[in-house]
Image (cartoon, rainbow, N blue to C red):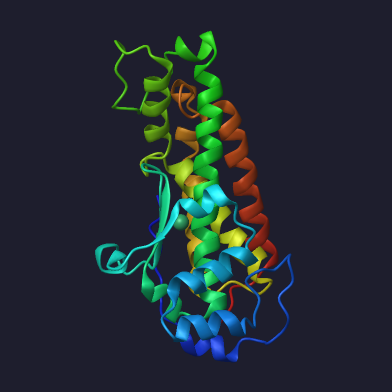
Length: 247
Ligand SMILES: [Zn+2]
């Protein structure tokens, strides 16, 4: 779900404009207390400072952990959100990236995490209804077992199929949403690789219109979630139209 290339850009941070952080742009620097904690390898403290700036709730905070070795096992990604178990892990190397960049990475994964949670609530509500439990619209969800009827089991199967990378329009909308959240949190133009990542997923969404319109998967890709994804994709297109790729 969260294949994302990350690059060390400590130098870029040194050239970032210095201005006071505002609540609307929590990734804007400077953040001397964060810098001091990170430079002295007090990563839990540095993460705490960042999560305070991001207004992360206690239950979200409990799902975030520092995981040495994550980057090495995950294509050099410094942070990763997973649907099952629903959690966010960050590598200690995240804290070498400077506040703005590290904060954008956390915002990206936090956006995924929050979307997982809202998807889960939507599916829970759907399988609480007779229409949900009797739905036959499971095409593309290989784990579906027609002999299983327990709402909690249906909800779990639907959730895993919904969050599978193979469901391209949904995973593309996830990535578009997360990159737009980075831009909003920093108040700065996106880094070029993030701009490209946004463009790549906007294109993937456009190209997956067949899956998107296919109604035989609406036991897990609920119509309301398709509507949500279409709105996210439109926001991504609007951003790309009005913003030039940074050099
Ligand atoms: Zn992602």
